[in-house]
Amino acid sequence: MGRFILNKEDGVHQLLISTSFESVNEVDGDVHKSNLPFRVVKNKYGKILVACDSIPIYSQVILTNLSLFDKNEHIDFDYLNNIYYKKLDSLLGRIPFVPNRLGYVVVVVAEGKSYELFEDGAIKESDLLCSDASLAITYNGNCDLYDKHDKKFLVKTFEMCLAKDNERQMPLCYIDTKTFKLALIKGAKR
Amino acid sequence: MTAIIAIKEKNRIYVGADGRCSNGVDMFVTENKEQYKVARVNGSPNCLIASSGKSDRNDIIASIPNLLDKKDDVTYEYLVNKTLPKIYKYLESKSLIVEGDVLNKIDSSIVLATKSHLFWIDGCGFVTECNNAAAIGIGKDMLICKYTKIKDENIPAVKKVEECLKHAIKYGQSIGYPIIIAENSADSEFIVINE
Image 1 (cartoon, rainbow over the protein chains, first blue to last red):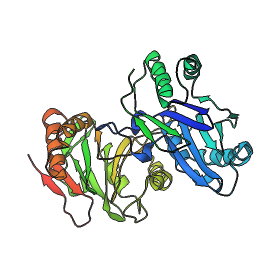
Image 2 (image 1 turned 180 degrees about the vertical axis):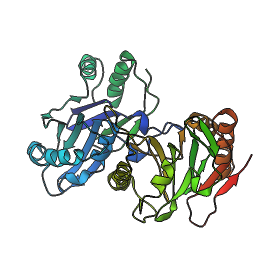
Image 3 (image 1 turned 30 degrees about the vertical axis):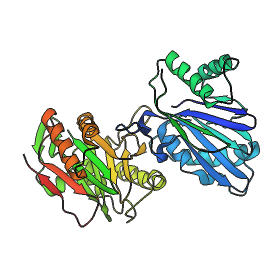
Image 4 (image 1 turned 60 degrees about the horizontal axis):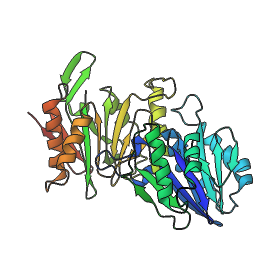
């Protein structure tokens, strides 16, 4: 399972998400674009950012089935609740490697709003989404200390949590909804 | 025990494996071409497949009818959604799936080289696309260690595969000759290097 922070400042969403151990090329520490923990897909109403925090075999299915986001529909709370979740649930139910259903979280940013979709169908709509309480607490604690518009703020928050939890550092992926360009942060320190 | 490495350079992919097989306490050398740990994919002769784990598993996976639907190249998306369920279903029909507490496993790691993509599939079905190299088997660490050292040297990729495997054989007790190297091109012959 990966970790992520997603915030929104001045109408721009910023996502910082960790890569999984399996995704990283052992030779040069790079991440092939197929193994990134998020994707960007376009529909009639703009770009949609989809990220996934789950066991890798769920993530790979979620991130390779982006046609579940209808090209002609508004991707909003109702769409995620009534259509996307049901399609996704049916798809994941067919994965042969998982005998018992496991948890997953899908983060969707579309039309200026961000959502967190859980495996039981619950959907949270918020401008701040964190994969775990540790990140959320550290984020809030750092809010007054750093400039929230800067990606360094998110990286700093992430690094503090990794150090606290004594977690192995993998490359971090950063993307914002202004440029939609990937920044791979390999040299993050504990 | 196994050492398998695949190296991708300039859209050519070379897959190399050692030739020693073990079955419980028995060890033997694969001299039969049918038992090589690297094989061409059934229906897609430009694609190569190699697996670690049970010695017979590679033959079984490579022989799955039209594993890649006769394609020479498949994308990550295709592999995840079409090929992987096919492998799982076929192995399940042969009772070769190991049931786990959380995840079921195929008890093998797989390297798949298509025309322009190199994939590593772990035992739980997680697919990783590799930029330049993939290594599996008990000799994996030794292979990666050697490859990291020589990857920027001005020698052909096929030679790098050979060097990596020689290193693994030298330091790995259960890894042995002959070395088998194949290229992802139907026209090429398998290279066999004996001690």
